[in-house]
Length: 333
Length: 265
Image 1 (cartoon, rainbow over the protein chains, first blue to last red):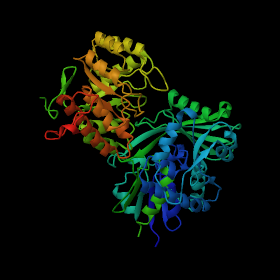
Image 2 (tube, chains in turn orange, yellow):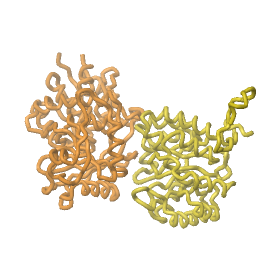
Image 3 (cartoon, chains in turn red, cyan):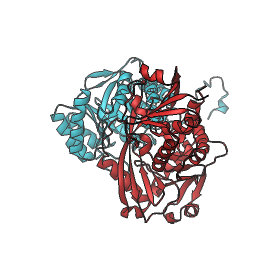
Image 4 (cartoon, each protein chain N blue to C red):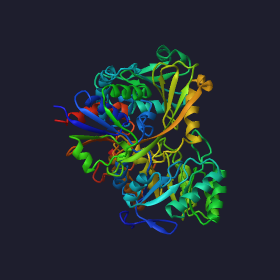
């Protein structure tokens, strides 16, 4: 049976929900901004799919949900009309000699995920994985199951495909979810507003993150790199055409203003210590995003009457969204 | 005898019951933080006011802190210069409406060792400005004496570098400071990893311990919080009970009366 469904919010979860629902239902998307959804956390993110590395910070069930999501991503991207970069070549975790204690501590805190073992790697194995790291690092960890996608390409490709499917878009439209008119017009409302739901959703907060996008022709890294450092733990996510996302700070603040000099220095200095080729890189952008999070930093799918809400994805948007959206869509009878 | 369940120590005239001061950083989530803080039984929570974390922008995070109902001890974590620390202390006073400031001035980027020289300078400025300073310092007796001379009523020497979890690296130094500054409120700050480290600090006669990573970085922060609470009580009980003197020769604890004399040496 085909329903009239409103998807409110055109960030990562909104796009995934619209893609899934528009296969069967009549979908209208509401977004407070434009088609770019510039305030969306998913636009700024590095879009890594790292269930093992993130298991250090989240509960095991969420890490397992991440594994499930990784399997869903290729199917989601296959339905798009444009190609979106996706890879699953693992993550390499490295540390400088003086910080090997941080690497050990990270290894100890990784949660076991069945059939997805972590591998300790020496300098030769690191060199085999990433030839440009030859002689740079003596110890590391390889997390083979992990991957990443190009989020900016996903944002534009998902919009194109949804347009072709004749999904209706209402941009620059702030929506009151409880509005009677809205409830009357649709059979279901999928609330994907992220922090936009802050006033109506109890205990939702923003966690600030800053990332730098670089174009670094002198750097050829093939997979996401995580640097363990006592003060500046960073990741470097390679994107197509020698572009790299360096991230991310995590600050308990709802200030979405421009990145600070301190954060930028920390991110770029750490990246430079990983690969000196970043010295000549061009800075494409320095962006700030607010991750929507509940007090336990766990995501929620809520169902109340006609409204199904997906929120609180915190720092695990790309990692968890496909599974959470599937869970939400399954609620539509 | 003081009952460790009811006795207290003084921070600038204010009587504090719990001998565990707890930090508010690095927890897996604000919910775990709130639960850990409650489990610790702490009366005081330290917070750092940094970067974009102004009270209005980070209001949800501050709400979690406020909801604990604990007294807030702001700190100047991450400051490297006297000017930076003094400015941040002044901001903290406005934001938290308290004259207390845990003064942290980092001298070395790698082991985060306090800079003793800048610390003295900043302490002097802040005391003249009406602050009640709780300086985070190394376990150097002369530095502690100089800080006392400036008017500090509380000192916070380190156990070991921040976040290392190595415990009390130099018990001799800590013991000396306790003996030479008998009326000073002394709190071991930084470097504790295990409840036994906190217990040792209290056994040495320290008034309290301040810790963050040992709880926030534990596999189960809430359970570890319970463990530290128990350890701090054990250490305080032990100190007030006065430990037996250490001996070089074994002394039997079982009476040997009636044992034939040729069995005794």
